[in-house]
Amino acid sequence: MARIFISIGSNTDRDHYIRAGVLSLQQFFGEVQLSSVYESEAVGFNGDAFYNLVAATDTALTIADCVQVLKQIEDSHGRIRGAEKFCGRTLDLDLLTYDQVVCQQPITLPRGEITYNAFVLWPMAELAPAAIHPLTQQSYAEMWQAYPKTKQKIWPVPFTWSESN
Image (tube, rainbow, N blue to C red; front, side):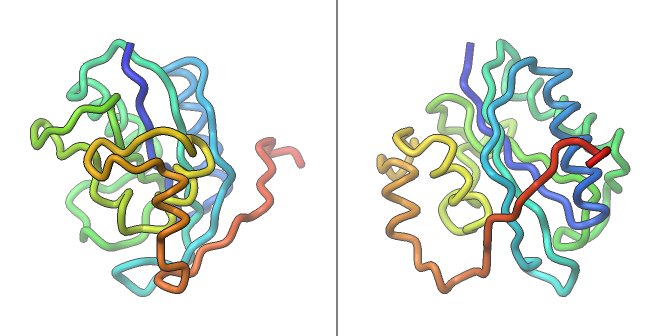
């Protein structure tokens, strides 16, 4: 079984799609651990603020199969393929790491955003503070501690996991 970390983001009907995305991950992978939910300004374009978090789970799927499952989940929640790279999203799911694998195919792992986007690094540091990044050989807690906090605006938000509240 491989330990995987997945970034989850939405800036369109955020509460709904974050809940729906996590529920879909649980349906595909079973038990999923979650970081807190963070709000951050859109990066790379002018748009509504995002909710972001990181999920961790274990899987017997290959990297390619994990990526396919994440794309299926995104598509089932209204993700539009072929849109601009930096644009609003109902649901964005990215495989961040797959154990300690470093590769370029079928995708680049570990995902580069871990080292330069606060909305990925902070939830990673919260969820797996002692885990070691495969390339930097630093823990995620050490990486977050060294991250220039003025680079991106991000803050934790209270999040209700039940739609009825």
